Image (cartoon, rainbow, N blue to C red; front, side, top):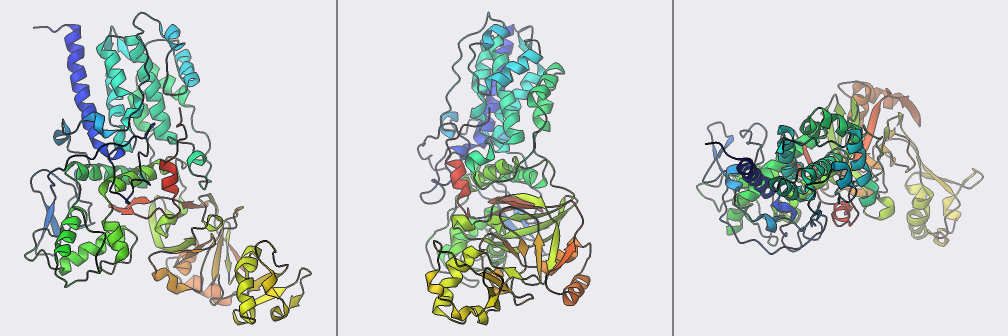
Length: 626
């Protein structure tokens, strides 16, 4: 029997509403509160229009994945009850299904409880109105003037429906909007319920306006980011040129009925962004399976060989993400297989991988999964602020990770630990970019006057031979070298700067080590070697005044000169006098980035919010892009 038009619309509405429930379920992290002291303040609703606290959800039965060990010693995931996704350890585990288990999501949560409230646009019925007339009083989510330009370019035609029915492209666009959480975005921002309601009521003028409006906003958010960077992160100093005019792109897509294709096309193509998105699916699945077991923040150190109830809790926690064997014969004993899981966890959280549970490892283990999901979403937002391509060769410093990557042709060829700026505002390493210009071998250190006046002067006042004993030469304003012990250094400070120039001699014993990498910038930041090699052993490495000290300067220098080993570079250092400049090939960009979540080679990594820049961003009340 043929169904009438209303039945068809209602049937499609039920189908789309179910899909919306699925996608909304994927993003419960946006509104559910975190444990006190662990991210509830830092990571409230990262992408909500109006943050609103929600009641704690009812406890759920936890389901976890466990591992057994094969004859080769590699842990293999065994699934028990409902599916839970483990973060893969390269070479040891099967690749997880990257899409959330949608069957389990349907009806699992109340949509209203998942998100902070987003005000509906509140448009009245527009059934008998033309697009041009309705536009004048339509309340928009995106920029109203841009929306008018879109319709003007399309001659004010309705393009999302035909003979009162939604087109195939319309249904595809609605599906994408409803699954915005899988891009780290909040679907509630795109008013999908209002779009579906207008469709159900047969108000195709309002349906058209709502869908065009929110699709335009989604495309803007996904391509360029929800926020203008400097509005929420004053230290993000990377400027990106204007992309293609989104209005023109939207008009072309509407005319060719290919808007859903455009919505997919604007997704950032950076490999780290794509990997973060895949891991976001996995972590959403972990939440949907009940989260990971809690591990106590307080307690003494745990070492391999120990036996206690906390070891059992540790095993249950790491079974979810790092391959611990939940069904070991002695679950309360800290065996070698559990140590391997602890090492994997420590590596993924920027900790020293000694396999011992100390204070910092305990802190990382106590962080709830919802905070980790929010870190992924925050880092995905920052990737949207970057150029589409970082260049064929690039040096990338991830500040919170204390790590440098040398990329060539889109993949990491070399990585190393780094030391970055301290947390004091004036000493933080900023986020910026410029091309590498040259390197300096055996560099002298011209000490900035702020360091001389604020740090060295008090030391020299207490230690008269401080400058001589540390290899510094002091000159007056005329350039004449003087005896530093003849100066009353106690009179100088931040408010009364010392009128002297201080230079430290060249070489491996100098503060800059054997090489300095120059990428000109107004912040006085450079990459360089250091004589304080022991500091690279520390987990927390924010010790500099803003410059980036690198763990393997000779390896980096050799790679930049196109060499596979350091023999040639070492010979250059040995034969070079002070401050010898070596040009490097053009087009090698240096980026200093701030990402507390990172994904590489099949693994996901999390780091502390070193400068509290995530916290500032997520608490911002700055309007989002239209």
